[in-house]
Amino acid sequence: MKKQTKLPLGRRILFSFIPIIGFFLLLEALLRLGGIDKTDMLINLSAGFSGRETHFTFLKDDHGSPVVKTKSMPRALFGRELLNPAAFSQKRDPGVFRIILLGGSTTYGWPLDDRFSYASWLRAGLPESADGRRFEILNFGVPGYGSRRILNLVRESLRFDPDMMILLTGHNEILESEFSESVIKMPEPLVAAHARLVEHSRLYGLLNFLAVRIRRTFSPADQPLRPTLPRVYRPQRSLLVEEAFRRNLRRILHLCREESVPLVLCTVPANILDMPPNGDFPPSSWETAPPDIPSLLEQRPRDALLHYRYGRYLYEAGEYEKAGEHLQKACDYDPIALRVTSRLNRAIRETASGGGGSLVDLREVFQEKAPRRIPGNDLFSDNCHPNIESHQMIAFALACFLARRSWIAVLPGWEEDFQDKVRQASDNQPLNDRDLYHYWQYMASFYSLHGAEEQYRESRERMRVLEEKLRRRI
Image (cartoon, rainbow, N blue to C red):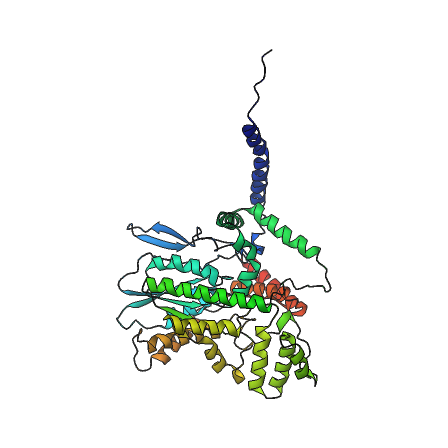
């Protein structure tokens, strides 16, 4: 009898993995055939950290000229693309003045999209440039991105021959740092692999989704709808985040200077009047502040909720300047740190003044527009996202900046002409039912994260009504 040849250990190990790989591929195929996909419930916080990733796809048009498209990366947030879909020539035409807008969800146009963002209103209202060229506005805002990932995006964007870059960022700094700390420490190939798997694999996305649900299920629940956002504010942590923010802004400014591209930095407004800290919905009673609250604040100077209660009390009492100070401190010390702080806005101003960049003080613009100079729900959809009218206000502020720097052709009455064009564009582009569904879908998620049960149920009911209307049209 012939003796059986024994396979080398390496091959035996390799062959033992083949059934396992086949099993997972089969599961992936079954999930795709069954239409099961939970990755639209995930926020892919690892996307954009790897320098090996690209946000764009390079193609050729019918004439063989290079064309760039934003890369299709769906299912990043509620089934939508990571970047607003766009296509443009890699090298701008001589008759074009190209401006690239960078930032997070505000620049993107969230909770809607580019059509209702300040990018869209700039396109509608800007006249031609001072040298007779037409403006091309490219919106590269990505929801959830902070300065760490925007830095990588700037490196890519500089290849597209911009005449100017405008950066609006600040809300996502602690979010990006705290939530993605483990990702930042991972070797870059692992970061890229994780991002790619979340983007393309139904099985990997489902496992991530189940892991989140299991963690929530076994977490102690002291209320029916428990806030899931961690309380991330810590004084030492906020200082580290500020230093990293300054460093990233300086790097972005340096990259732009190397390519002789003007960089415009914007301060960032936030809802400080109607957004209670700590996800406290409904807010703790502020109508009657305890008489000893000033002494309590002396004992607990970083207590965000105390500052908020006292600030609201002072606001109702007509002491608006003092109220604004306490409401800003409530934002600065908010344990759920999803709004820009005054220290980060100071970093933006100082970077612009000390590094050769330009500044548009949007925080001041919002204060001038807000009743009593304290921005609230009249200007915002939530804690930090401007409403459509406020996006139009941002566009006008940027247009005024371009006019002051003589980058646009300034003729008498150009301001009225700009605003008329924006109003006309807005009238021609009303919100449809799908837009409203996406809006209330986001608001339901926002209220769920903050444990706001009444507002969550209200948003879900609006979604249900819109869903029925959309289904009847199919």
